[in-house]
Image 1 (cartoon, rainbow over the protein chains, first blue to last red):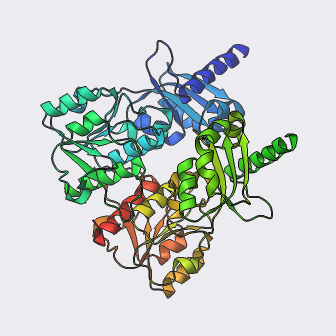
Image 2: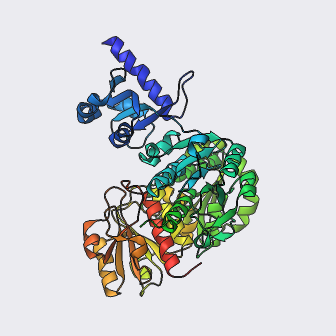
Image 3: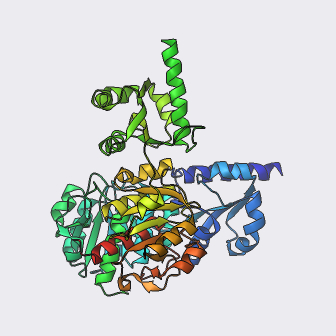
Length: 267
Length: 267
């Protein structure tokens, strides 16, 4: 019993590190997930859960349904509600958390050919919640995939995973891509780079978003990095009634993805 | 000196309460603001600052510019950087914070007549960041104002203020409005209620958003409250390629406001 409690404590420490965004030395990246919906979405998408922790309350609600879906190699523990809450860095923990193995896509997988729908590129985004929101919009509006540059917050940041509400598992997601490699890949595959920033030129409704394109969303205040701006075929402006400094980056990207879908004739 | 330090400590406690969203007994609501841009936006919009606290580092950067703009009745204090950081509940404090007097609009002020642009209604929203993002989009896309129902998170929640990035001061904002009063006001002024929820009927591009309307954004999962749904002329659906459960409420509202502006012929 004492040994089991100790194992539970060690597992909770792993979860705490994962939810803080700290990678484990010498291990592959594992995505920290909290709540039955996010975990269910991961399982339906084929993710393998390496470890699962229930709170005492959560075990009563979720364990019977979840246990049959776990491989026999998965580590499982039940923690006291307070210990569970302390380990998972989320505002309203639901009582079950998992570490899931999930592959990042490569740039080559992302752009095997000219994509029919936009590829969304997060450049220099700082807020993981905004990136998660963008992944959700990319999923809803049928983007080819989501890719983040080395300088941007990563799509596998715990708060980005959470804000994506499971959409992360529905489309290819790549991270830490070098700006130069992206520009070169777009050039070779004849994919237009379209930069959405605060001081863009082409009003959104006037832009042609039906060709193969890479849509670059920059940092809220700082905009799109210069090399990408230079490589861009177009810089987009979302028309506004009142000129505010900038829209929330998640909102700006979602509006452009919506407009691209509208232009491609979905309805 | 000791007396001054004590006054500073009392003021920091007021700020701590305000940033936690705790109202002061027997006082009017004061909005907690952090950072030179948000405070500057408030001053430009005519807000009166009742109290200002600088961190030691922030004082060196911001005090010379800000002090001449303060009334002589404003309480001012400088706190050690660590004490400042502990009092302001923000992730990256910039070193200056203020408590600003700012009026909420009434329903009658909101709907004096048939509004030309949509009035945005937050119904049962739970995330203050989403509401702040909506206020920012409402500002950008020229909405008449933003109104929150009694059951929704309030637009004057510290995190909503922050996410609004100053837009809160650009258009009328009302809070704690009763559902029945809103429905009655819309009926009298011939304003159509349009509900945006997960299971809406009319696809967004097919909806006529040029007439006087009240756009109701519901909770992400739960949707729009039933009485408002019954009173609604239309329930809107944002078309999607992949059917995800729902978009982020801030994103969904922003897309509809953008579409309404597009239909009204702005560009």
